Image (tube, rainbow, N blue to C red):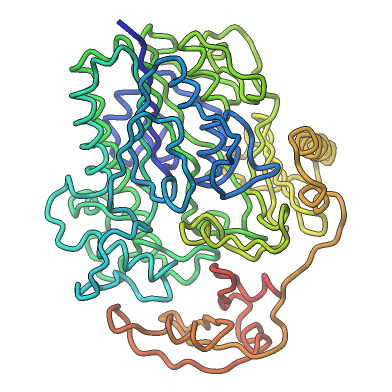
Length: 545
């Protein structure tokens, strides 16, 4: 009986929303049961961020963020699927994450069989303009109205749970498994965008977590940046919708894993389940995956779940200590097959950690989003922005995070404040101790610069962390266009067209709002925490002053 591998990706799945990782209130019985037979990695951290850069790290076993970002596979990139197919393994990819197979991105490279499942946001599937779709919330609270409308068209007329995206994709995967489990050896890669936005789940999953008295906007696709455009009740609604979607994902994962067990695959198959990053819901006064100056990568975003079932029981039910990153998946899979990774693979097999031999795999975890203009000053990250992979301006001002297990150092470009947290004493990262621990911060800063230098970063990528030359984008002159929201605060835009599109739509709830011409100074003086939308995210006025 040959060896098989199943790698399952659920995008945007917060580690702290899984019972196995200590969550007491979200219902995830199926993944928790799977964890009883799997190794639970306690210190798995993202590397390249977010979606597409993460997939590149996994596919190649290399760190992309020092020199590449949200972009297609390069012609010379050799993927894990190619390596396994060359050894006679049947390679199969089933996915609903649209961008992996669109616009020449070619993340299907090396797979002998592929099947794309329609329905996610960003999938140009149903285009009928006559469908009477209606936005779930007022337009100024929706991150991307056109994308949300596309999702609503894709799901218009939906009746059954199996028609939700995770149901479609795992049903497809179960059909494939039931008819293909007898391959001599197979590698099945399942990539799902759920529980990424829109936070969409059946009513019974939502009601498990919702306030029964709430009757306001449904915050399925909240804006990124500062969260105060939402009332506390609306933020609670977003959290309930997300929790419901986590429970939906868990239930369908249970069905898939039950089938794999019935087919006897637990006896000869390595099964790995993980995600690519978390998602902020108001923590640190941030929402979603903000970028630029607001793109600070805290533990909620960087520390991710990783559950690995080995057919011989290695690590079953155990909690594995030691830093691992997505780059380590490829060499670990190859070792399971008895294969040696190519010389250019930078990740390391995590099996030594599972066996508990005292090995330290990585002294540090490095987590970062590549700033597009670090390689090409004229490049605009349009495709990344469409799929929520890039917000904020194209300036190189976004911090990166270095973690060593105890300390988390958020390293900002020179001229912007860095942060340091003692994760043992302060796991919620509420007390910045950089002034009290300058030597720790210096050590981790030096490690960050050395890592960039050793992993192909250009001078343009490194320079902002060395030279204090920050280009602050402050709209202190010229006119803006703003309206008052339900909470009485200004929300300001650079153009009148943007403001009017956000103020009211006929297919959305909310009143017709008066758009006024204002200056940034007026917005700031009225309330420093009035909101300004720039580069696809919301700032407080004081952030830009």
